[in-house]
Image (cartoon, rainbow, N blue to C red; front, side):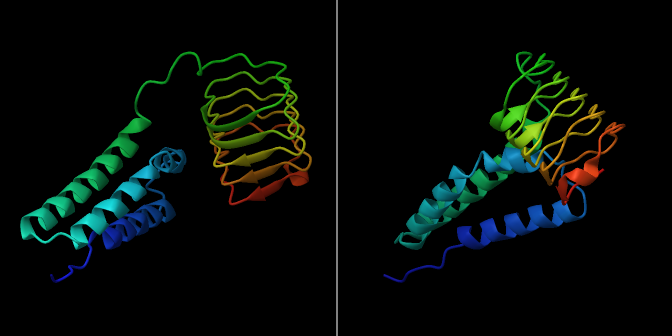
Length: 190
């Protein structure tokens, strides 16, 4: 039996390379990476298909596994690109979180939420959509925000001492009265 070379591994590398290239030239929205991360188990499926394809004895079976892997990759890309366009649940959007004490969330939609005066010291927000949120007067001392969309948010008079903003989009955000020099801004837009 002659063992075939797998194609799914190189295909995944090409797709990841294209994602990184499109991200560098600004063709992907900021929340895209959070959506893609939800599909990480697909990599395990592709590895399994690659192993099955390389050990198949029949040419038809080999081609079937390659086609199946390609369809899975294309399907995941299509879902990831359209996922954000789906309507958001009302229970998450427009929430009034005035006076909230802390947040430790991953993959959360807080667009249009009201955090006015909230005490979010030490909170961890990762892959969060907080576009158009109201954080006026909120305290984010020591908070960590990674891949957070704060575009068009009201960030007036916030306390951000020792807060870390990593890959945060603050384009068109209102920052009047907020001293961003007291925070760490790493790869942040706005």
